[in-house]
Amino acid sequence: MRRRPAGSGPLVLGAALLAAGGLAGCGGDQDADRARTASVPPALVQSGVDPAAVRVVRTWADTLRRGDVATAARSFAVPSLVANGGPPERLTTSAAILAFNQSLPCGARLVRADRAPRGFVIATFVLTERPGPGACGSGTGATARTAFRVQDGRITDWLRVQDLPRAETSPV
Image (cartoon, rainbow, N blue to C red):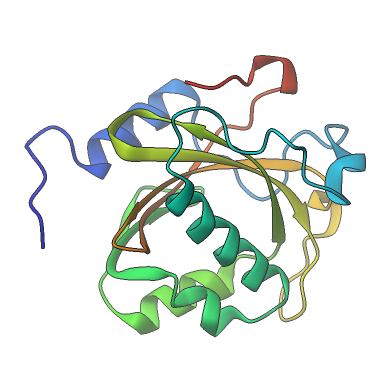
């Protein structure tokens, strides 16, 4: 396992993301991008984004949206760092990663991927209903953004970030 230099780890980025706008729960701007759930725009991946990381994120989201939570959870490395409406938490077992994925009430369709510092990709999703427990409810059709770090084909960091109005999103 590779060691990260001091001051460059996911907790530092997580704190920076929290300070910049906070974590968002399921939901977001209810009027934004409802019509975009049917197709992915041609400019999904912005310049400088690792296409292999985007494939992992898209596969995770597509699998979760189909309701296959166990397979979606296998997209994560053990351990992984997650934050979804609370402080970052290190998940150190496959069971904890499965429970985290089960706790997500919405499915998601990837609509954009932007480069971010320290090897992160900011993924923008349109939220959907998904089979299984939980209900996305009024969050369906809203956008949500998550910072992902992918290493060796697995998600190592999943940090929910503030959803920005469409006019404010741009590649880093």
